[in-house]
Image (cartoon, rainbow over all chains, first blue to last red; front, side, top):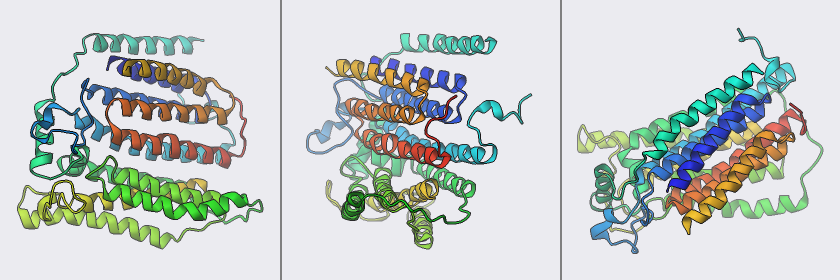
Length: 117
Length: 227
Length: 82
């Protein structure tokens, strides 16, 4: 499906734009989660085969000829684990944000210049 | 201002990189050889209806084991960063409606989660989705009572129990079936196609993954949401 | 038919993504990011991946939004400007 592929790339670019231009730390994490969603949509739409059904082989699928009737299961499996990891990484980033806010009382990235050169 | 120009240049470069990929992308009409083998093997060798489950648990089982490890590490990181200093008693209580409904819905949501991860080889869903649903039930409890204290020893016990048994089922493959069979689910009988007790060790492994994901995400939610 | 639904949902998702990045109010930005994930789960369902759709609906629009809101609550100010 070409439209969902384009949609995934657009979301990826918008999220990257947000991560690069915004000053607020929480906005940067939101941009990261948008990039995440865009990448997942790209991977799932690469595995889609038009006119075929989901890879659940119950009574609606002819078992003798199953490989001709279902979409690719591997991108689904990869994205499924990636979503859970994405949640855990977002939680870790947000706890860093909380820690930084407790230390410096500021959410703007301009106030954290210790590592700037 | 010069920063904005560089950002725009970088994004335009990214778009220029993507355009040839989109223009020359040809969609497959057939499954690739590897994917067809996974689908055939899921019917003939594993008796699993849900091909995604058989890919996650068996064919890419080592990948899933590593992924659960990453989840454990991030949970440890969140727990380290958000150590609780002292419990502050909050005076504002949540509404009566939320408190009553949470007690009623808690059991139902837990049961739905258990249904989803035990039927992972038959219907869409599995350990990850079931574990997240169990986390949602605990989230409801946290929202209803801000000063709720979880029993951490039970959480840690469930988490380490499921992790240890996941690896031990993998090692049983070594002992029973030989050197190439880490995480092979055929150590248990395969049963009839389409029944609950079928597909060898896949329901057991997916239930353990569900318990592990549920307890780890509950820990994350508790650390982030607790006062 | 599937392409029309994907185009309509895609336009809504792109608008929501712009809102999530440009809104000053952090709570509204977080809710917009949740809307993106919720519509993405419908798109996964149309692309014949029900497992991914379930995961995204539970995690992307449920738990991620809640974690962001918990962070805002810890920071104790709903309306910080840039």
